[in-house]
Amino acid sequence: MPRKGDVQALTTLYQVGEEKQRELFDLLKAAARKGWWEEYRDSLPQEYATLLGLEEEAAFERSWEPQVVPGLFQTPEYAEEVIRATQVISRIPPGDIRTRVEARMARQQLLFADVPLTTWVVLDESAILRRFGGATMMRGQMERLVEVSSLPNVRLQILPQEAFHPVNTGSFIHLQFPEFHDLVYLELLHSARWVEDQGEVFGYKLAFDHLRSEALGPEASREFMEKAIDRWK
Image (tube, rainbow, N blue to C red):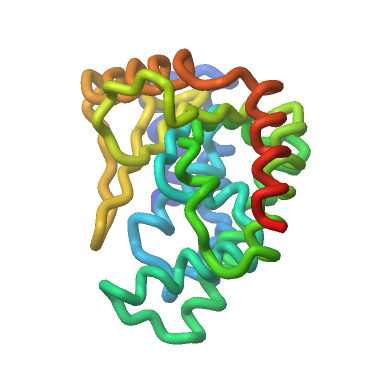
């Protein structure tokens, strides 16, 4: 972490204008602040903690999810069942499960902030048909999806099973920043990785554009999800 005096000296040396100088000092202050996710870091995978920090800075997010409801939209009960499902391949202590659920719920505050995150999600139909927990819990999750789909900063589309879908890829999150280049987050079986090469990042944007073009529109998707609620009576 550079000291304020070092930043002052460098901006003087390189004859940085006042506006850019203020911007650099603001970045220095922001970097020194402890993010809300820091208190959960010991219980979270490193790359996921990085996602939480970068998501806080993002202006726009695109997300494709073919298997489960995205974390930004999960209820606490659904989130816990999804996390417990990973016990087949990993052993997560009960305390860490609770902490991960808490972190996931805290993450959702991005949708309701003074300057909320704008997110565009394409969700495969199979994700809302796959059962986690009991019928009552699934019904609550479907109701939650309908609720968040009405937010002005959320665009949620369902890709139905009969849709044409030649894009052979797992889930991904494409983050767009106001000042920095875009990044793509990929969650793997035992880890996660970041895609920074801009040619590859652009490929994920093209993949998302194709998926959302084949998906139902927002209104039709909401009607689709409302019908899915009845499935879990």
